[in-house]
Image 1 (cartoon, helix red, strand yellow):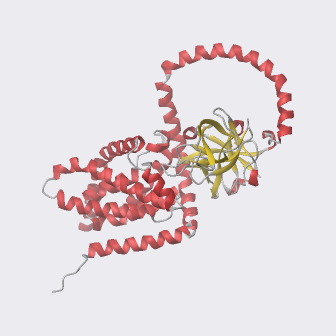
Image 2 (spheres, helix red, strand yellow):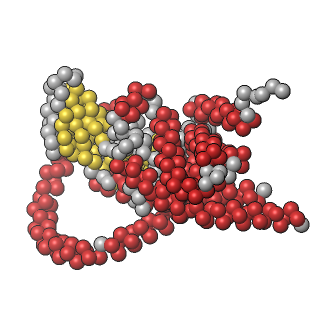
Image 3 (cartoon, each protein chain N blue to C red):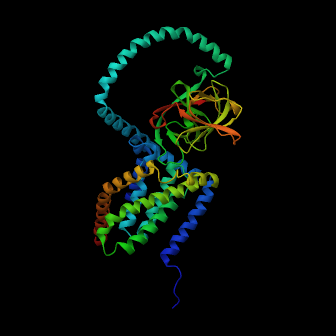
Length: 179
Length: 268
């Protein structure tokens, strides 16, 4: 219960930061995807069975605060967490040092999937979506690359604090269990 | 023993995806609105606090970084100030003429607007739409569809959604935004549409109409959605095409959307 509350608060803080703090420091087109990076790092470190609830909660919270259709970001985060759990289990089991080389690629893939899903559910007609996709307004432009770079930096900054927090929550629940 | 085609993990994933699609379907019909209202009510104090606090920090860093330029800018401004004093004297005579002309063109006089000042407390961090969150809502008399301007009567958007203490404003650069507009210099009529958050396009201008680079674009008042005469921007590029029915122009907005702090809602 306590772990759930703490995670809810952390997801809430990250969502509000993305909406109300980052726009003051980054141009609109390159605001880092704070919640996405957080879900991604959880997916790298934990099994899908432990992450899907967090991904779902994070997605729904972001949808409510960012005025998307309810479920769009949840869909994106679930697909990303499932895919990343699948990849990391198969590639990174024996070579944990590879994590730090592969995480940037995972972030790139996650940002692309997230953008694609948001684009599909943002446009009223498929024609507008096709026009923007074909004119490469979605990917492969300078703001996208800048945003990916900021996501990388954010991932590097929050990786260890999130890991420490997880360990602390594990220790607390073990103490409670033994009592 | 019969081998399962899908593992329990995959089944769980597919089931969740199915539920989410159903959720999206009903949300598109407006079923999620009550939850949005609750979420906005809870998040509003945090959004406002964080936005204002981070704005102060951002401005402090900006100030520190620009100290070297400030001295130079100050000297330039002092010179400009003395020439502006002369200009003020000349313009006081033209003020009367402006009022007469505005009346003749039936442009809405700004002093007649009932304005509600609002601070910006959030911005869309995504790229595909452009909106801002303001700190006034239905409790302050804000309603959906109201026009939002900045100082000097520059239109920036309209109210799209209203909550009790906040409201979401769709900016002119949003792809869903469409404003009936007119070229103030030539009278050409068109529709100013958002360009995926990148800018504004003046579209549906008849090929027989004349539009030039540098012309000012204002709201035409057609459809009575936006008051007539609100500034939108200036034309920076005209796109000619002989085989298309309409011509287009790119507009440089007068307002800096990334630096909106204080906006005014025109109450009906």
